[in-house]
Amino acid sequence: MEQRAGNTKKSDSPFTWHMAGNYFFVLPALLMFLIFNFYPYIQVFFLSVFKWNGISLSKTFVGLANYKDIISDNVSWWISMKNAAYVTGLALTVQNGVALMLAWMVDRDIRGGQIYRSIFFLPPILSGIVVGLIWNWIYQGDYGLLNGLLDKFGYGHLKEAWLANPKTALTALSVVHMWKGFGWGFIILLAGLQGIPRELYEAARVDGASEVRIFWKITVPLMIPVFILVSVLTVLGTMQMYDLVITTTRGGPGLHTEVPMKRILDEITPGSRVGYASAMGVVFGAVLLVVSMIQIQLSKWFKAE
Image 1 (cartoon, rainbow, N blue to C red):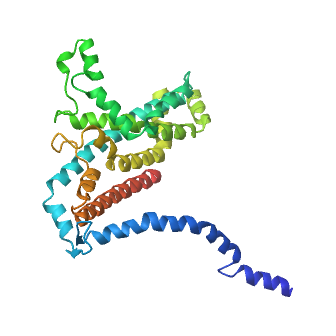
Image 2 (tube, one colour; image 1 turned 60 degrees about the vertical axis):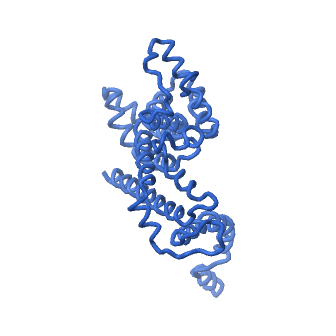
Image 3 (cartoon, rainbow, N blue to C red; image 1 turned 60 degrees about the horizontal axis):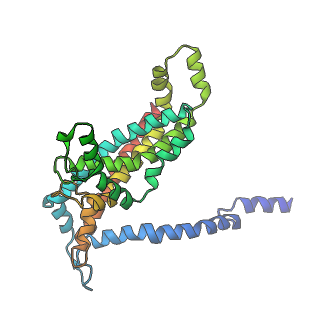
């Protein structure tokens, strides 16, 4: 009895060696997170209240002046945010719409479905630099593939220097980004579609429901959490786009394809305004955080519905 009482007292203790072992296994990952994720955020916020060129040993404390300059004076920063919002809007609608359509077709057990999965997933695993070089050749004004095809099919009057024309550059860049990124959405959406019980579809067909009605009444409601996940990943990935811009337009012509990540990194070059760039990073991170929280709240609202 004494031993049983002793065991009961031991199990009620808030700390046990078994729990300590669990924390020990988590500790390396926690330390890595704190060093490589949490500490840089703190450091960026700290630098954002200083005027510093990134080289000098001395920093000048300026308080919130960097934030005030970004909000009130930095036109190019807000143009880059507008451009990023435009590309994100196209990615959310066109890119994810195409990904859903292709995932739905492959989920219908069409012939060669495995081959399509491999083909559709190829663009996301390519380096952004490689993708940029490929599409530079496709969009090239004099000998590019796109203009060559327009000539061949009798639409030569539509030829453009697609990445050099201010009217077409941002949309052309958006097409490149969507081509590279739609494979991620395709894989996630396909996994979501394959998680829907087939019995629901069979029961609906037995009741005489059309394929369109099955899609809107069964597929779409059950896929809402997946749609939200894909939309959050799309927003975060698109807003942080950088490599494709560098390899295709470098933000030009003018500021027509400028994006926030490039603006921030341009400010960090040696001898430039590191404190100001850090403030940009904080503002940009806050915008992404707010957008993500709105999407997560929408997800909870749709689940409640």
